[in-house]
Image (cartoon, rainbow, N blue to C red; front, side):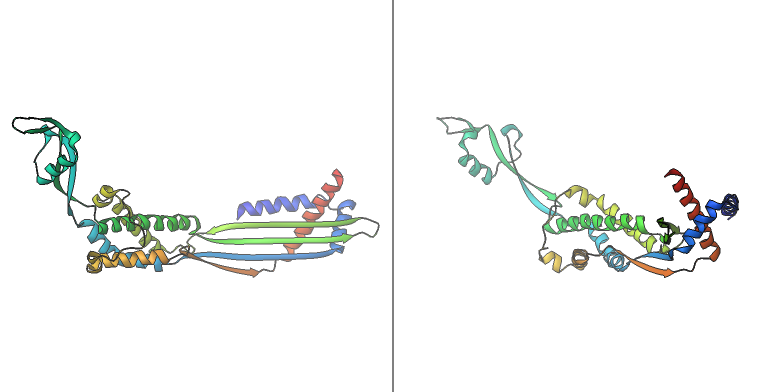
Length: 298
């Protein structure tokens, strides 16, 4: 407060230099004779995290974690047209395919009837994560990542409570000799309240959930599937409806699809304050000084 005390002392000293100044006294008297309106307000703005959406995600995380760590594989047949020298196995499907694509025949021995193809169809089986259920989980994680980050970034910007003060002063004066004065003065301040509405416990929970979803984005399942997503609505496959973990994931999907709130609530309290008489007197003096300065330029 010492800095403010020094500023106040300097202001008082500046005003005292006008003691005995007729022009200053006349300006002050003119302003005091007019109609004056003074308002002084204090506003507290608190932002509180709506933890309902955070709770729903936390409930589903153990199930989502189980699915991510134990993804279901399926066997997929992969067809390839390869040079005959690289062929692994000639199957019935290979012969049928060659009969339908005679352009792949390189030579036919007319005496023996032996056919020599240039290329042949090879079919081999391999494990893959590309199942509907895995693509559903991959899509859910992608949507969760966006859902959480949108709200997290907003909360970072608005997490602290704020205290705002506003002061308005208006005066309209008429000297009676053709001189009219209309002066408006307004000042507003906004300060953060340290340790305001930023709920430490809820914020810590949010940080943990955000970190978990970011980790899932880097899992084997998500990196393997990449942008292999599904389109809503989610199909109720047997694997989804009969698996507890996948059903929990489906419930979470339905929740975030229906949740359209910002993720936090804003509470505002606005109360009128009664300024000190000394402050009002200082405003009169400051306004008179500004009026004199204005008149000197005009």
